Image (cartoon, rainbow, N blue to C red):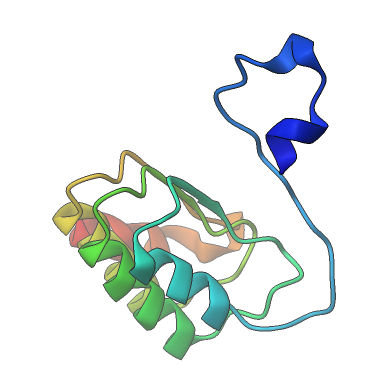
Length: 118
C-alpha cells in the first residue's frame, strides 16, 4: 500500500524509516517484532517506557533474531545488568552490526558492563 502511495520517481526506493509518535507505553510490542525476526533496524523512541525486565526480554530476542542489523536504545537509561545483557546478546547475534546505547550518564561502569558482554 505504501509503495502505491509513493510517486513514480521513488520506484527504486530500498528503505524507508517511519517514526510515529504516540502515547507513552512499554516495549512489549517491539520485543514481539524482534522475536518474529522481521525488523532489520530498530530505534526505540524516547517516549517508550523501558525497564530492567523489558531490556532483559529485548536482549534475549536480539540474541535469537537473525535479521536485526541495527539496534538503538535511544536515550534510555539502562542499568548495568541491562547493558551487560545487551552486550552479551550483541556478541551472540549472527546479524547485529550496530548497537547504539546511551545516554552519557551510563558512566564508566555502564560502558564496562556493555563491553564485558561483548
